[in-house]
Image (cartoon, rainbow, N blue to C red; front, top):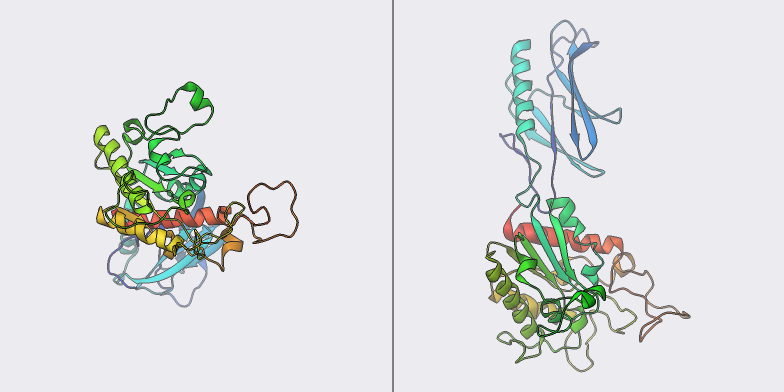
Length: 374
């Protein structure tokens, strides 16, 4: 990719530092010895120090910039018209040549000026996003109560996360509370870990809400667009009700600029309480799978113009990767003692490993950026 501007490349779901390395040729070919430092500086990103230095070459003051990390040179450039961009993403280092069209500089003053311009551009580049320090509410069941996948939005978008989550709860209880909206909630129920109904206080000041449920409703028929709980007890009816409830509280809180995203179930494997993976028809004879659940949730969200993160189709979690992304690497074990569940011999490949939760969080981050920008 070539460009004539010093622009930071952007990609969904990541924050990038671009380190610019400017180089000028060794015009005095008879002398290759380093004549000493012309300048020395450093740049820190995520606690890692990247140092860069300009050296004199021969009798003429000609600049050659090097960047080092932990004492080792990680790059430099070799022609007058090249500018190399290093994108530093964890341990990954990707190099892209950019045609910067630096004009030939005939004097030390002109070269220094070019270097100053590059440094100025580097210094003005922001690594923050529009989500930086924004408040994010994660609503969900046990996959959210694990408090892992939202960490990707914290690290990559710089958000602050609050949880409204509890394992074992269905889609309606996640917004209406474990005892229903008419239930009694007090310090005693709080101490017992009973989830309260979603309230205007929960959504006040939030910049983003992600709702992630449905795993505990697999025995519910999917229904059709137009269904609404409590008249229709279907996944479609639940999804519409959930969207209505979230916006009911956002209206009460005066926070309608908050962005909302519905996240579908991923392609899950079996686990000790359900002897059917995501591909299997469940309940028996219903003709529905976790994919049909996903499809109706997407259809209802799209009808309401609410963004969707489609984990079923896009997460990369599937029958080939359950051993990596599932909570347990085994699908079935012959003998287990002291293991709960209706099917205690099943490995848990519905809940996730740390890698699996990170994968879900990465998908959520990408969906947020794709829908609402960086």
